[in-house]
Image (cartoon, rainbow, N blue to C red; front, side, top):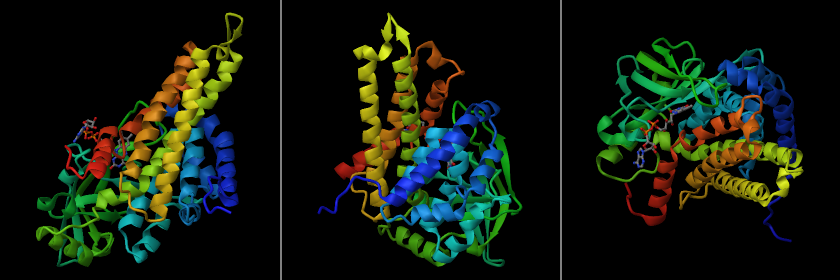
Length: 404
Ligand SMILES: Cc1cc2nc3c(=O)[nH]c(=O)nc-3n(C[C@H](O)[C@H](O)[C@H](O)COP(=O)(O)OP(=O)(O)OC[C@H]3O[C@@H](n4cnc5c(N)ncnc54)[C@H](O)[C@@H]3O)c2cc1C
């Protein structure tokens, strides 16, 4: 008997069915309304919390899967229902990933449950790295964190932009620069607990897609947090910065550590959107008749669908591989995390556009979900590292050359 299997296990299949059922019966029917309203879908998050899908326990259960696949499976199914609502439900997990990647076990135990709250008291979390002048170039963050020794507090000042759940979150995880001269190696992540004065929402953005997900600026003005809010602790940060000053190597950078862990999951969301568009246009192609026959009887349409299915399956395999590598702590030697997000994101954009083409005019109008799938897909080549940045990571990893 071989140890290798490409079949999902019983637990994974069960969770897949459970999330799919929620996506089909609750999320998909609500998708159009919340896309139009462009607001956080609180009633849907509440329903997810009521059945335990939006909860610390569920996320912990997913991350406990030693194969790493369960969280990817859940993300794909939920985004199949609707990517904007899915991001409202799973947006908090980016902050969770930040705490998980950089926090001590005590910090993880204290802060992660607070990212979800309870069904009667739902909490959201946000992860803020990007700034108006620092998007792809995360080494140039201007948000500063200064240590006040007298009170054992960190004082944060700066503006974060494009932050999912920014300002409406109860817990924010903010990446700030402690020593700007050290670039990314002088940065650290801070938890800003609920009710902390000095953090507020700036502009809320209106978007092309994933419109049920809230995206806004977060302004930090003399925002003071206790010393224990520095993820990983001060001793570790001081050590890391000392090593950086001596020119020694270090493997962990606050923002990068989070993105490494979350890229396959973002890729899984893109796979979910692509699959939704593929399934919808496949059904349509069998129904729609022109010239006296179903349009799928034309190779031009059928081959498109064959290519769409092939690309989606390939994307999912890259996602599963990267999720498995992350869970089993295999090194991403060829940028496998980036590959999964890059390929899945570009596949989602391409597949959803093909789906519109297959549906003709019906694909282009808002009565049908396919134009929304396309609008939703585009963010997957932009956030969590643009496609260009993913290519840069892969190219540097495979070549060992610091390609610019
Ligand atoms: C809806 C939405 C939600 C988001 N959520 C979050 C969030 O929750 N938290 C968070 O921190 N951020 C978030 N972001 C920010 C997102 O991660 C950034 O938008 C993204 O990293 C790109 O940064 P930028 O927009 O500044 O583009 P820029 O970095 O200015 O890039 C512009 C263009 O130049 C290209 N480019 C830049 N540098 C290079 C290079 N060296 N080589 C080749 N090409 C290059 C880019 O690929 C891109 O095509 C979100 C953004 C959006 C739109």
